[in-house]
Amino acid sequence: MLPAARLALRCFLALIAMVSFARAAEPGRGLTNLFFAMDTGTKDVQHQTPESQVAPVKRLGYDGIGIVGFAQLSEFLESCDRHGLRLFNIYVALNIDAGQPFDSSLEQGLPKLQGHGAMLWLSLISQKHQPSAPDGDPEAMQLLGRVAQLAAKSGVKVALYPHASFWLERTDDAVRLAQKASRPEVGVTFNLCHFLRVEKEADLEAVLERAKPHLFVVSLNGAESGRRGADWKELIQTLDRGSFDNLRLLKVLKQIRFTGPIGLQGYGIGGDVEDNLRRSMNAWRQLRTRSAAGEQP
Image (cartoon, rainbow, N blue to C red; front, side, top):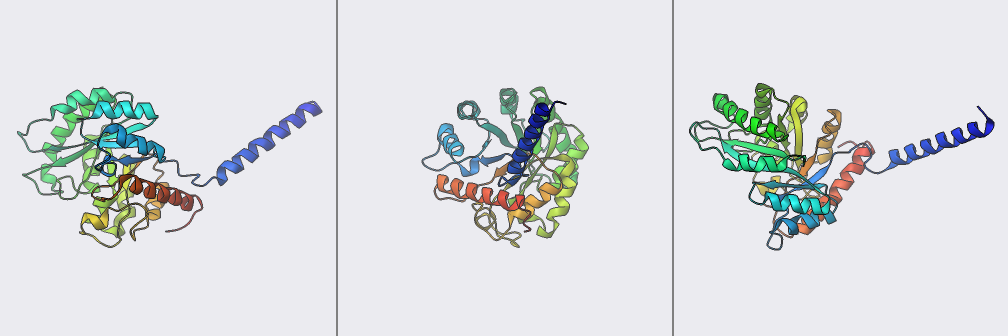
């Protein structure tokens, strides 16, 4: 190799090393999960329309939004496209009990999600079966199979959504159903607030380890620690509040190599939406920095 070429190569390699070092030193390096706001925390009197919710989500640095139901789906998709954001989830709750009418909005709405990377967030309720009771599994699997077929046609994933007091109440319930379904488009959601309300906080690591093969999405928020069974005012707060250290959750997610999206739950917080979103985004950035620095919870 000619001296001039050798020198150029060395300079190029040195530049690569400098860029790599700079990127490694960036705050939050190593935690690459997309972070979105759930519309449970984007609505107030001044923020009712899709555009009025999506605009501040964009301005404050979120990667997108997750919404409840299909009623305003087209408007949310248009607004997200306009702002360069992603619609991450559509939340629905379906009754597994035999004879219950099937939600026709799924058949009409799911095709609209094709190519947008949005998931169906699916909660399951029942009047016949107690929360977490496996005797509801046959009916649940029949319903889930129908939903999964519809979702697959549009390239949409189905993330089972555990919800306190619902039949599908615990993360392990969602894992059980996902294993039985054995379909690539069916997976699991981990919801911090619902976990803290009905499960043992000490089991966090074990629960997420069991969910690992099927985990599609996670939701978090500020919450008080050690308050199992508490009301939502204690278990759902802005991300900068509460005694539960979300760094513990992020540490587990890194350990199990979870790369999916993380959503901000905001149900029932009240107050000014934009202030809540701003506080939570600032807290998220601090968590990323702490995580990148290897800080322990």
